Image (cartoon, rainbow, N blue to C red):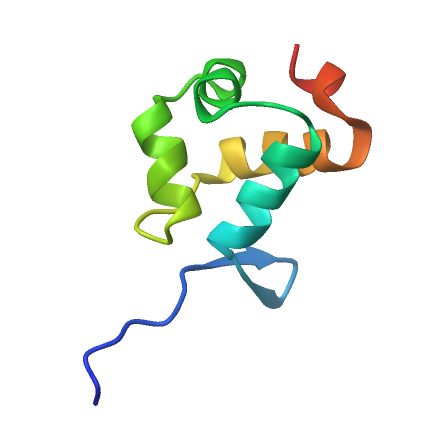
Amino acid sequence: PSGRRSPPESRAGDQAVPLAGGRIRAIRQRLGLSQIELAGLLGVSNVTVNRWEHDKARPGPATWQRRLRAERLGVAALR
């Protein structure tokens, strides 16, 4: 083994879905939010958002669902 860890995964139905930090960053930027703004809307710290974006941590199930909702419906879904 190379010592590198696989990206974290989340279960969506019966399928494992990789949680790529780049995807979280791209969605945040598309919504026009800073890490601090997204963190406030999701009820987490900006450090947590940074860790997600760098694949150092992953959102919990409830936060992940809110993030998916924002991706589908826009930032208004988080307010």
